[in-house]
Image (tube, rainbow, N blue to C red):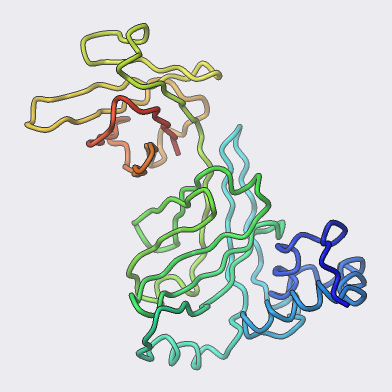
Length: 280
C-alpha cells in the first residue's frame, strides 16, 4: 500500500532531480526510493514526464561554472543537462507543428551545487517558452534576474520560480548557459502619499533600507505623462562597470528596466500602494 504520509520522505525536488540524473551517488536517497512505494511512483512519474532514463551518467553534465558570491547578491550559473533525446530528434520535435494547450519539455539545467534545477518548457499552442525553476522555497522567495548566454534581453522570475521567456528561437536557449542573479539591494516603500517625512523636495523622495543604502524617487509630470525616475544613490558593493537593472513590484505590476547613468524610469505606478524596488 502506498505511503500517503511523506513527512519522512525526501523533498519532491530531490526526487525530480534524481529523475534528471542528479544525486546518483546518494546511497541513502536510492535506498529510500527502493523501499518507498510513494517515492517510486513519484520518480516514475517524473521519469515519464522527462522521457529520460532512471540514471544519467555524471559525465553527461557539463562542467559547472564557478559560483560567484558577492556580499549579498549571488550569481547562480546553470549549465544544460544532456538532452533526453538525440539532438537531431530534438530539433525535429522543435520544428514540428503542434496543436493544443500542452507544454513540451525541451531541456533541463542545473547549478553547481545541484540545489537549483530548471526545466525549459514550450507552450505548444503559443510557441512561447518558459523556464521553470525547481529549488527549495527559501531560494525561490525572491525574484531573480535571468540572463541567457548570447542574448541581450533579460527577464525576472516570479515568486513561484516561473520565468516567461516569450517567443524565442529554440536554438538561442537550448544549449546556452543561463545565469540567475539575486538582488544586490531591496527597498520596501510605504505608499508615497504617506511619505512626507521622506520627501526632500516637491515630488522627490529619499528612500533608505535597513542597510543604510539609498535610492531617490523623483516624480516627473513634464512630458505629458507621470514618470517615476528611480536614481541609485548609494548601494553597497554595486559594480560601477556592470550593467545595472532596477525592478519595481506592486500588486498587479512588475517591471524591469536597465539603469542609465544610475537612473531607471517607470510609469503607471500607484502612489497609494506599497512599493518594492530591487537593484540587480
